[in-house]
Amino acid sequence: MRAIVYTRQSMDAAGEGRAVARQAEDCLKLAESRGWDVVAQYEDNDISAAGKKTRPGFEKVLADLGAGRAGAVIAWNLDRLTRNRRDTVRLIETAQEAGAVISVVRGSDLDMSTPAGRMTADLLAAVARNEIEVKSDRQRRANEQRALAGEAPRNGRRPFGYTLGLTETVPTEAAMIRDAYAQLLAGGSLTSLARQWNASGALTSTGHRWKADTVRSVVAAPRNAALRRYRGEVVATGTWPAIVDEAQWHALVAILSDPSRSTSDDRAIKYLLPRIALCGKCGARMSTGSKARGQRTYKCLEHHHLAVKAQPIDDYVTAVIVARLARPDLADIVDPGPDIDVDALRTEANTLRARMAEAARMFADGTITGAQLARINGDVTARLEAVEAEMSEAGERDVLARFVDAGDVAEVWEGLDILTQREIVKALFESITIMSPGPGHPPFNPDNVVLEWRRGDD
Image (cartoon, one colour):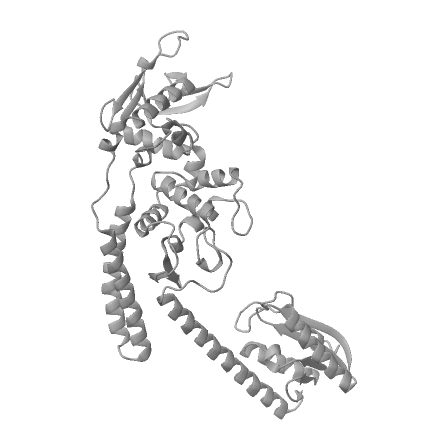
């Protein structure tokens, strides 16, 4: 009899298909003992029994049986061959029509041409599916228990900023994450951060270059604040070291969730003063453009009646800003931020999350009804959102704070992306008005750039 050998191993930890190889060896020995001619060998490696992915090898088995290319299928066990009710029905129907035999190393032959064989196959498959579901439920409960206890996830690849298992931080990567928080909270962009990280030679934990969305996924992860997420929700404080404060994390998530943020606008902004500087003739915003010789200019957006060289203005405004930020009284104009007891809020947030977890357990045990669970979750969720909003407010930093006690202000300024520099311009100045330099091409005159300070006076 011509036979097909089929093997499958779900999530082969060794990554080398060794378990599948052992199954195949046993199946071939069985075929040899029966005197069967093995005409094909198919395998599906690293495909979960509980999953929904198509199994190419299994599909080929059905195709060969249906075409009459074999009269028997050999598998190590029935649960290696069938995975769910749909697979079982398809196998039974195909094997019945072909009059094929299913032979398993760990079991008896099933003649699918007989009612007894089909019933036995169906019953054995049902038992295997039940074992899979019970195991999956136990695993889910164990994962939930570890999450509520704040334990780190046990699977997955190494996250950027941490060693595998979150046992400790990677100092260089953690410093990059902290700097990213500082820039983003001060108005920086994900696109600019991706450029900076790529320029530094840093790669993702999987060895790829950075994009704006991969930067977002790293900085927005709750693990940075030692928060444990389970099924999309923060459920506990983690047992691993935090890279940033929880209040900073909430503040950053609020910024990244703001629908008014536009990555296309971020990419379009390359210079310091477009749409910030005002035309000295009509008060319209100034845009940046270039003349025929390629020299960049600032020009009136509405009437185009004022066009002046842009680089001398940028250089002058930058010099004024650096001089102001280097003064010892800078701390006097820096907003200290809201006076909020973050530790107390963090404790309350953890208590609220614990209440929600306990309510879920009580509902699972039948102690409370679904209506009671919904009412508890509604009340607790409302308060938790309010607490997290307060922490978000506490995490917001003044864009000038980084310059207080900075050693080299000019170096710090040059290290900022253009969006952060523009936020600092808007924080320092009520307005910047560019006056006409007069007829001809006179040299740059600082008096033609009128600066109105917002915070203090130079």
